[in-house]
Length: 81
Image 1 (cartoon, rainbow, N blue to C red):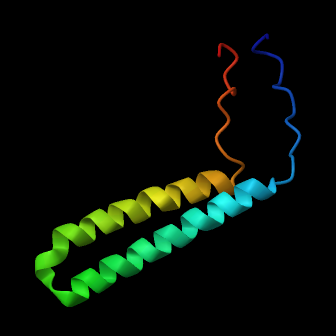
Image 2 (image 1 turned 90 degrees about the vertical axis):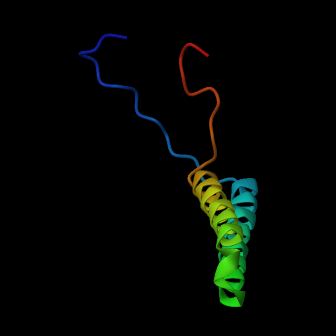
């Protein structure tokens, strides 16, 4: 491919139902983890390290949900793979 050529146009495909289900499950897990962190902090500030673990889980689950809702991870998106 020459650098003066524009890249080929990628056609958009509709989101597969498995991505919606997986993303919804991860989004629900993130919401549950945030609620658990709030409940843990509401019980006592001494449980702040436990709440941080819950917030870490929520962040990773939210990231996974965003990946799923955007079409999932494609492992063959590099030409040398």
